[in-house]
Image 1 (tube, rainbow, N blue to C red):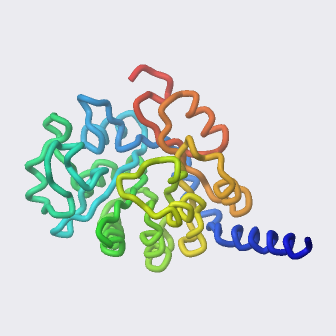
Image 2 (cartoon, rainbow, N blue to C red; image 1 turned 180 degrees about the vertical axis):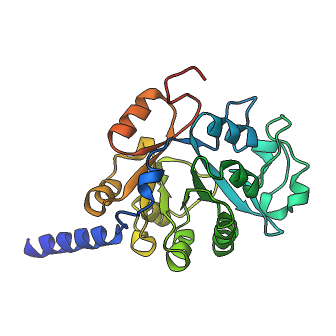
Length: 276
């Protein structure tokens, strides 16, 4: 009996230690004052996600924005969610195989909106609203992607934090740019079918934030519908980690997330309670 209890206690202590987060980043007070429009404040079909129109709409209405960044063949950075252009541009192309010049030929969701470069979005937000920058690593390019993104961010007076599902991006940040606010994206992977299949062991590790002892994030960005989990609760209660909730799509979810102290990443409604 004592052996079982001691073993259980040891497993719990290891679990808690693995969830380590960083508390009290000096930039969080400013970042925490904003609501963030998911992939810009888009409104299909007229305002595509991750388009300059969506980002302008967010800025003009007093919101920050969340966006997705991919590293292209020529080292430039594109703002788009999927690596494949099939869903967003109706094209059989992969963003990592393109140059910025080649990218210019594609249009988003049947509109005249092009896929933006990160520098275009940074110029729009400079001196205005903050950004949540999600790094989309592909083909093992996590180090190159993270380094290129940070180097470009350094050139613009933009307030931002960086997040990724890939802990290796956060490990790079912790080692090379520890002053940047960094966050671990996650969800209950076993509940959701992913485009890129993961082994069940990897899904369990990422769902339960068990790479935190290597990444030591400032915040956890967790899927709103999955957020009632032990690992996230311990990160907040024991380590003081901040929480971002994605993706908030109703006033009821907004009220709940903010009442719990989480920053909302919203879409498809006006969080001010006005008509879209």
